[in-house]
Image 1 (cartoon, one colour):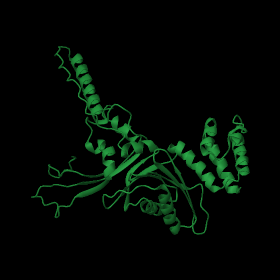
Image 2 (cartoon, helix red, strand yellow):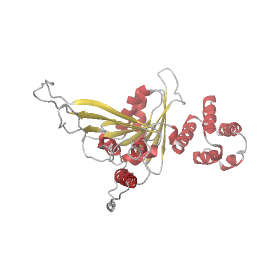
Image 3 (cartoon, one colour):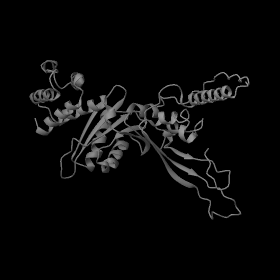
Image 4 (spheres, one colour):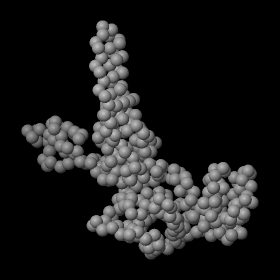
Length: 344
């Protein structure tokens, strides 16, 4: 077995929590049950990794097997990477039956025609998710197994989740291979990024319902009292209840998908007094709005209850999951006040 392969397997095993190494190796399926039972999982992870490497050497493991182990690791622990969402488009409404074998063949042919030194591995899962691992090289160097890109493509959908390596210059090649292999004609980044792959899937596959049109009984008006302090406390309580009710109607009762980055293009008209003649041409004002947070949607949800924003929040903030499927391109209504920008 090649030294590079042995070292890569060793490092992959070291990344796995000790109590879960057996389960991951079983899913890998490269070592027999007899070989697995011979491993002492009570020793240090370093010793365990050395034993696994010795057994892999007996089975003559190659880089393809090492790559499959890495795919399994990243499938179990996807939050170790940062994922971006891409959406593909077709020119018409035609639908093609998906053929995994044909997809692999076209993807490999397209990528390897542009770059010879590249290692490509596939693994298909039960939820129609195809995991693709790409290790990039250069015309003069072998593929670097530690600087890999990952693609998760759900067949029969236009959505692709990509975790790029530090070699971002290869991203256009990767996108071209995807649209050719899946019979699409265009691909765009949706400007959604997160460590939580499942949350991104919840948003684009509409498995997450943001708006719950729940109707709550009207609160009875408080009877006026002579005690000013009691009235102030009651008004504060009513306002907090109103904020909570509005927040539930906008965000729902459940936890929000974990999103870390979002951006969209904003286009609005600047309207000024015609007599002032400030603008010679009426052109829209364009800008790029970016949001980032360790838990973006939960942060937005907490703004009003924390007193940092009025309730309900602006649609520019609450629309993020819904606008994801439209590349976050939002056009505001024209302003109604002289020299002002007005949100919808």
